[in-house]
Image (cartoon, rainbow, N blue to C red; front, side, top):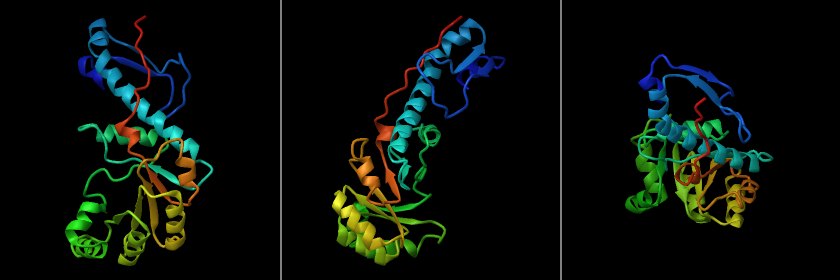
Length: 222
């Protein structure tokens, strides 16, 4: 897209398919165009592909770490302004699942909403009165009592925010598959296996997009 903005006639020959794993020194793509285009577009094009490949790579590490479980990896809305579609596409290419793209996709009731409403029950009730039934409602919970209240209120998804492993295990038993459970907060590659083994349905990881390391890709002129 970047190169063809400057040279619509640029010839493009991909050497790998989207989402493939590659080794060092692999050629990703070969292309032909005038030197002015190749040099002018180089940095911008690399900025895109290096970030996107970095996100896909990090996502694949998380997915691989819990492949022995049924738990799925979710992204978050912690993306660079203007890059959300690209960031989330990259997560999909790494084997993850996209959480909501925006506020209208899914209602997420967080701690500040609960404080304003007065309780989880009141917050969910207020939202249900004004939301189409096809829009799911997710509630952020801090402890087991919150989980019980969110379940009783009819939440479609319950987020276990920064809970201990022991609390997550208890929450899974209490919910007993009546609704989906999402673990979130302070989750990394060193603890994600333990979190997944609690039996939660999803684990959301903001680091996939807000703390990504760019993949090392270079352009070589022949």
